[in-house]
Image (cartoon, rainbow, N blue to C red; front, side):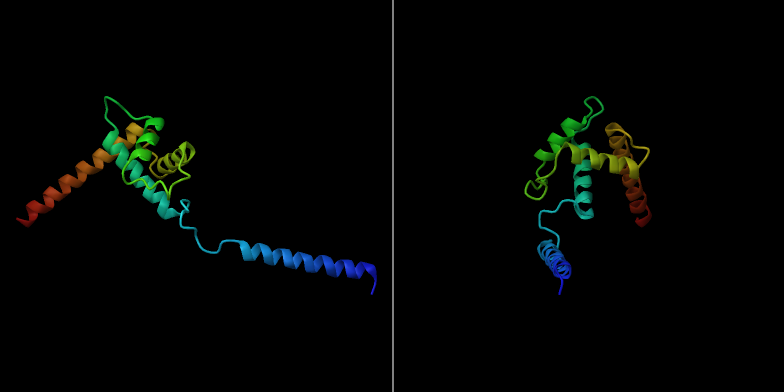
Length: 133
């Protein structure tokens, strides 16, 4: 057996061993603090909308910095699960929301949409209650 064949066999065996090690040590199931899945993004988006609804006023509109601080201080914000949450993640959430709802391009527009949706829901509930009577 020549030296070249022995080197080729050694290289291939090391390559297979390395591939197995990478596969073996890669996480196969989601980590408990993974905040990049769709459910976590939706949960953060709902929390963001809740904070906008509670803290935004037309006289004192929220900016991104104040929104971030209110989200982090909110009682339903899980600091252990969302330990990676920062300004960049908030901007990604806002951009994702703006892409989903193109007519909302600013925080005041989001607040207006929330209040309009609540008003429509309230009117529909009143109408349904009147029909039941």
